[in-house]
Length: 452
Image (cartoon, rainbow, N blue to C red; front, side, top):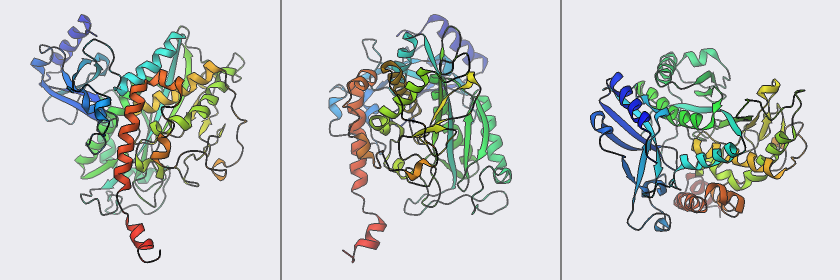
């Protein structure tokens, strides 16, 4: 667990070079949001390892604790020991004072990886690939909405006004002019991303009003999870600067499509970089077919890691460009698992289930674990789907409660994710579902008050 001396020295030199006065010590929580501490730079490397109470890892999105809280943490609410990951050291470009941010790994007092850390969950999955001499390669595509500031949750969200002074009212997929409406925001977002060395690629206007999508350059799975984690903070900060909100809610507006975090993925040999999904002739390999079969087999158990909130399941409805069953197909965007046309060394599959609201560490861990188990077990996928998959039957959960039912019932998934983590995750999310389920909606009052 001890930080390598060379890492400590490199961090110290970086802080000194950038004249950093304060350090944000960050830990991704279960929702994928940042928890941590602000520490003066001159104290950061002299105080030893920072600490945080482990109970923050089992809080609901509302800040509450589940009734089973003490089953997952020590009765004393013990501290987690934090270790900085030098590769995540970045400036905070929106801070008024020179500030650094660095993501930390979480450990127990005995030096073991903390089982409730979502970053450790992904690391455990990556260890399985490394033991086989393999390395996953991923490329997330993250969608989000810009919305007008709204401080009253009883009012529906609406698109913000662009530089023309008007709000979008039409579907403008891939529109250049629609993006230009928010040119200043886009320029600052890219400048912030560049300052933090985030490997963002293309920006497009998506189908919804003021909905955008950023594609990341493919690369190491942990690095990309870290980048998505940082990117969400970055977009929110850039939006605040221009009097808007940026939201990664899966379905923020009733009449607009949802926001996803599609994950492209392939697997290469660590020693040669060879893509194991295509052979020398460019044909898809048995390993690739088994990987897809693994996604089909384990998605029903792991869907709550892709769709972690009560709002997430509003995305999964027929005819709104989100998957509702487990079909796969070639260059078919109506399927859950799409295989794009590509050169052999770029052969990959796109998992279209994860929402933009997903914790990137858990969503990437879930999809990679599914593919890994598919390859290990030599599973066979269904035939590729032709035609429109969302005209077929719904095969997946449509509520958070349903999605959680089988989360910790599969031994091989318990081995990978940890039995404690899966129980804790289910308890936290079920508490969120029950709290949401107590809210009586306006639809119920309108249609049931006097009609039933």
